[in-house]
Length: 189
Image 1 (tube, one colour):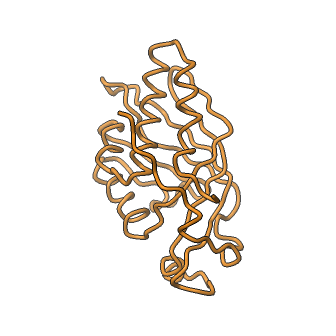
Image 2 (tube, rainbow, N blue to C red):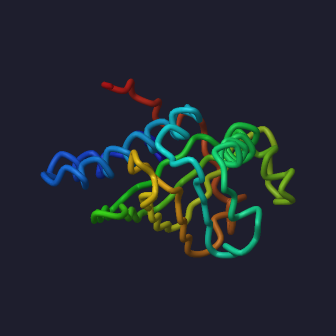
C-alpha cells in the first residue's frame, strides 16, 4: 500500500495511551478525534473539536487569505468542502514520526501523502498524462494543534500547518491506483 489512511492517527493514539496528565490526555483526544473524523469526511465531527472562532493557517504563504481561513466554524466547513469534498482529494495519509504535547498544544510531524484525482489537478492547471487517474502528492508537514485559551471546553483553536516544498512537484510521474489505498477501518468509539 502506498497510502494507509488509518496509520495517520496511530502515533497520536499511542501517545494518548502513554499520557497520564488529564489535560494533556484531553488535548491528545481532541487531535485524535479530529484526525479520525477528517479522514472519514465527517466535517461536523471535525467542527465539534474546534472552538467557536477557529483559525487555520497554512504555510508557506500564510498571509494569503485562501491559506488562512477561519474566524468561524462556517469558514472551516467551507474550507473542508472546497479542499476535500469538492476536489475528491480525500484519500490521504499523514505518516507521523513525531507527536509532542504540552498543556497548550499538540505538534505532529510527518510525510503527507494524498491521492489527487487527475481532473482536479487539470483544473488546478497541472499537466498530467491521464485525467481519469489519480496521482500521489507528497510533502513533509508539521502541524501545531493549539488549544483556545478562552474556550470553556478547551477545544482546538484550529491548525497551523507548515509544509516543506511543493507537494505537486513531479506529481505527473506518481500515478496511484485506488487499489494502493487501504480502506478505512471502523472506529471503536
